[in-house]
Image (cartoon, rainbow, N blue to C red; front, side):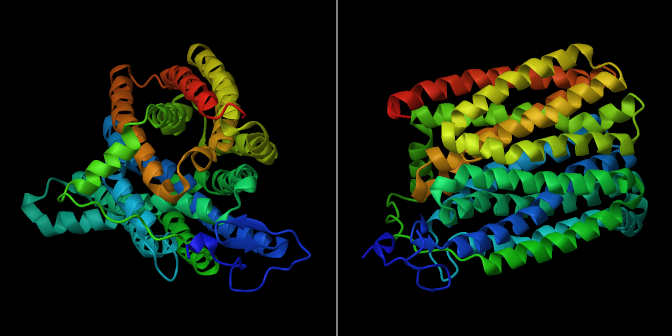
Length: 456
């Protein structure tokens, strides 16, 4: 008998209460109480994840500037390196996770394995100045100098951090897809967005103003929170049963790669979807990557910058559950396209007008709210459109396409900013153009979606 034909049980093996209409995700059947517990643990894990995500990039940017890195090197390490690693690591982990069958499921083992290495990477980042000084002392006369050694130590710790973050990211979405009932997925991601915003408020209201002088304490504190929070979530959340994976393809060492490429990249619908998601997710990148430096370049202190972020998070928090409901009600494609159209218009205005702190503040807050609306509205798009049993595989294929954009855009933008004398206003223009291109790609996806699903 297939795992999906097994008698329904609640996570932990308790019988489902007949008087309460259960909610299902594969073989998992939830009562309201157990669904609440699932959401609570997933949201707690997401809070630990989001604190890490919210803090790592801006603190790393400030550290690299302290170490004397150029905009090109900064964008290469923080933007292109993770994308390049993701192109290699993401597909391999996604496919292995889809095929894995074990006592703890097919996603949680990978999340548990990656957690201590992510923590170790953050500890390495915290102590990168000391590690660089030690490296410089060991090399002696052959050292390239203390500044270069600090950058080498930072790059090594950042690479460790990113490799295992990518492993976790490759399967975290798959875990949600496997354990959350499909009828609630949009609203659940709305709650995820709300947790992400709370994490953003915590970091940007209380911590970012002290990041330059206290980056070591911040990284160590977040390492502790992430290690404990993510581990507890993995222990508490239970996966259900899965049907056996399809038999492995014969035909030599490249057979699996050939099958992966054929399944993911020969269907026009999925190709357009991958491109649309790449452009949509990339659209906010130019502003996000250099907003800290933009604020500093026009005389805004980090405390004021942090409060602008808090304002965007508060508004986005208020909107998040409603946007998730709209995604369930009207489909993530439609919600995402509306958000992209508004975002493109406002960012193109910012590229022309945001020349002082007031106009920067208006454009930046609008950027946060509208980019957040797009991310919240389309968060469940993969769960709605990717094949369920090969979700991580198709998600990783989407990640490969996105990685191409993330590899090309940050260094290109960094070089352009270096050559224009660091006129960071151009980042708004770049985000607006990317959003307009993403809207056109989503229009192609929507056209084919209507042909495939005329009743939706």
